[in-house]
Length: 354
Image (cartoon, rainbow, N blue to C red; front, side, top):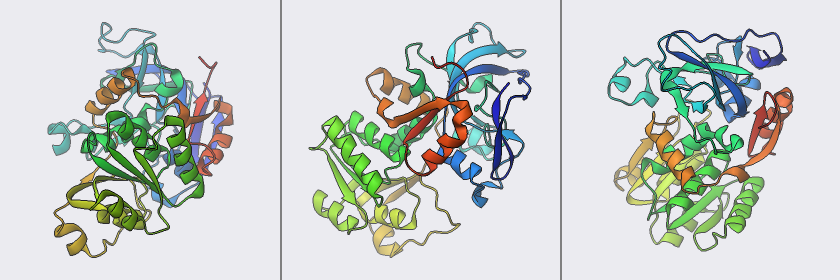
């Protein structure tokens, strides 16, 4: 089969001679219909040192995808998984034995491995996953949307960690995940949303989103280079109820903490480039305000998947975030365009587009 294989840090190529993977016991093979490019893929393909401890080349990349069930491994319940069924999968393979797993928090598994990072993934014609990770999808879900359920799940997990319905919130960082967080927050009924970024391109995308969705009465765009904390605190009369920190930048993290009202919540998804982040005026800005800080990793298995499929069923529309679709052979172009911020989401097709 063809697939995009990482051969060494920062080195990858499209191969056409990869063996078609065979499902082992309790595994399922899916024929990939579409796959999305993630920021993690960009870091891997650019040889970012922060990823070198996680990757395991040679490995087929790709962890956002949808496809159709192609073959069942031994012991898989054929009554539950029909051949040809439309599906996606949680790509974190968990141990089921660590304290987090025993507590039902599989998304925080201490020894999780990730397909497309240190196990073969979905930038290929076929991918094998554990049967317990497969998520069956509605047959009428658009394939390009189904291909990016992984990042949408991150956004749903972030926005619903402290439910923003009926609350004010700030979204710090309007990249693909931040944009999806905004869509989710608006859809579920956040009363006022502040969107912050430092990129002119991202700020314009946010303005375009507000215009397209007619959200002028509920969304305020803030240039984070110009006293963002003061703008949000003044606009809300004391600070937002919840800040969703997506940027991972130390300034963004500190701004998120400072713009939340006393007894409010900060939800952190963004990953800093360095190993340490300094919290400014920690006692005043955090302890004495009585804040609660939450960490988001991936998607809750499988609560988040159920939440997001329910949101999509009820009208959540993210198709406008997919700004480029191309064949798998154009992977290198897609990675570069996505990495430069020219595209919000790029979807690849290993075969004929459905």
